[in-house]
Image 1 (cartoon, rainbow, N blue to C red):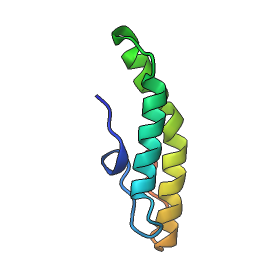
Image 2: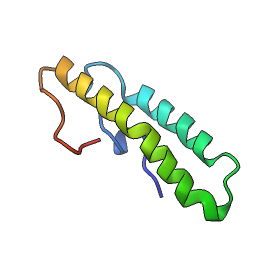
Image 3: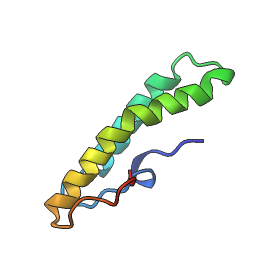
Image 4: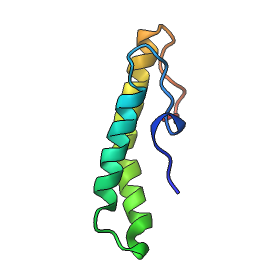
Length: 77
């Protein structure tokens, strides 16, 4: 199982990034799973998560700053 979009990394509404991040998640997830066999799915999901974490965290922090709330808590993505 994996999570994507707002359920994985909710965005405050100051930069309208919720949908954009969900689309990015879906594209990276599709790429990671393309051609994966059942035994390879876990590794593909790990690749998806590692490819999205820094971008989602950065956008989340940017949205929070735009709203004057400061960065999200450490470890939150």
